[in-house]
Amino acid sequence: MKKIVVIGLAGLLLANAVARAAETKKAEGDEEVTVITSDKLTADYKQHFALFEGNVVVTDPQMQLTSEKLNVSFDANNKIKAIRAEGKVNIRQTDKVAKSDVATYDLDSGKIVLAGKPRVMRGKDILEGEVITMFRNESRILVYPRARLVVYPEKGGAHDQFFSAGK
Picture (cartoon, one colour):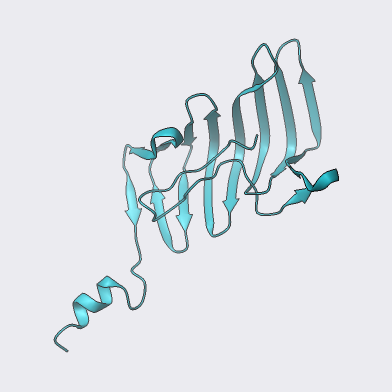
């Protein structure tokens, strides 16, 4: 679970997060842990899955994720293989937020897909499209179709200096 990560666009939006949380929980020995709460949990280690349903909250040392459902699939050795969050998905890491109807994460490839009105925000900056795909291991992002990026210049930044020169 700690590997869910949202990657940003050229430092403008998210950098490093779809499964690490804003609130740190400590276990015995000061080890950082991930805590998942939900109204219901169905786990089947023979079928290699765990399904959290209703008011799902994942809190991890680097991020927080909320959704209506969270399906975690495991490989034959019960190591996490993929994660799928559905229904009002909200991923928060410090000043960065991602929202969508569905978020999937494949741990091996590092591929994160946000679909269903996905929106990634950092401060006032916004990235939108019909599908936002982040390739964590390659530090790249793909938004299609209808990609839209809104960037607000910071006061005193390059935009202000350019327009105020000569005044």
